[in-house]
Amino acid sequence: MSAEARRRAQPRTPALIGPHAVLHAVAVMEERLGAAETRAILEDAQIAVLPTGEAMIPEFEALRLHRWLALHDPAGAYEIAEEAGRRTADYLIARRIPRVAVCLLRRLPPLLAAPLLMRAIDRHAWTFAGAGRFFAQGGWAFTIDRTVADDPVIPPDSLFDWYAAVITRLYRELVSADCRCRVLGDLPGRPLARRFAIARG
Image (cartoon, rainbow, N blue to C red; front, side):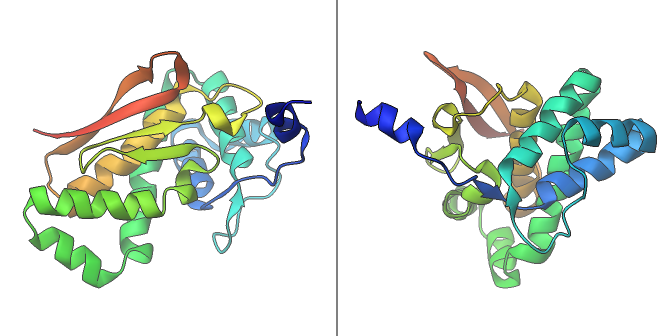
């Protein structure tokens, strides 16, 4: 048996991410789709009980939620993912990023603030990228590669829009108000490796 086959045969511990990846998405779904449709999506995603917000959760819960949201509402899933991403970033700024760091980043010029923020994002990327690999490229670009995550189903494009929305909000609040993170596309030959770039204006 090859090393790759042995690796795949070994049981894997589910990747964990922050609970607000689910909590904010559900809140936006209830506002946009209503309680009944949201309950139906949660049932399909096999989420019987929402996270308390006090502990990390298995990443597959968020992945299933995005997948079933995209199946129930293909067009609206993008807008819901973006608003949920914004709210997740607001929570991080208010509750998780030290106030000293927030004040420092806001006072620095963008060319200095961006690399500092990207380094912090890189250190904590596992809390939102889970089993995906996060690769920072300077202060203004990064890649999230889910190829190695062995996702049982291909994640919907709206999941990558959620990533972009989180980063957009962080940069707008901490670097410059005219920042926007965009999904540029796949890496050649790696359809689950998406390139992102942050630009001003």
